[in-house]
Length: 113
Length: 117
Image 1: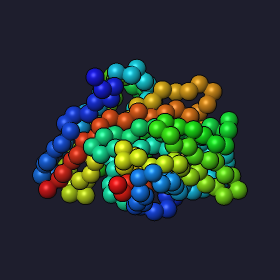
Image 2: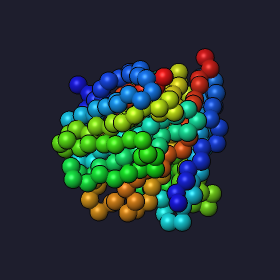
Image 3: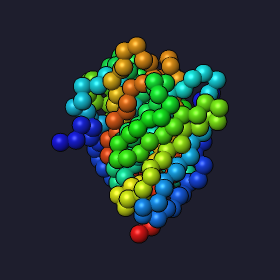
Image 4: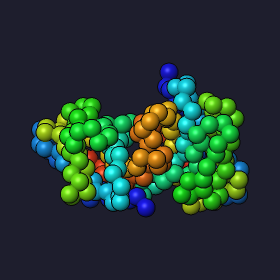
């Protein structure tokens, strides 16, 4: 069964610092991987997704993620944090032929002024 | 106007009451989903529907039922609410990506915060 692990339920970074949110997946077949963001009092919206076309995926708002098969990871990064990045971030995974997403438990990102 | 709407946005009810949460979408998507979100547990799938005649249980369907009244409407019911159903509930929709099963992006509503006393 597919599983997704997000290390760190809370991450705090200073404004302008690097953002790194970690996601590891377990899958016996090649996965499709997603990062969603949830701003306060809103639903989730897609940041980016990995579809096997390229290992480095660029998303909205300056975020990107790199698929590393050897590490079964899909970590989310942003070079310079902005106050508006404060939100909860969810990693999710599925496989070809599996039409249900498995979500991680989420990481709440706090930006320190 | 929002593409995926949920009503009500907040609801407080008592144990044993029947509750219905409604979801409507104007995106023209055929697929709809109900999730619940609990702190520290992420999102868990309750039910999903790939068209009006296709309804499937998710990982935590016990205590819930659904109705797909039309392509654009998908309702979630709690027949007899209990306190551990207190959670944030999200509806989501997606459109099938032909030839790439599993790749469809899900679009979420704003959520319904349900409290069962």
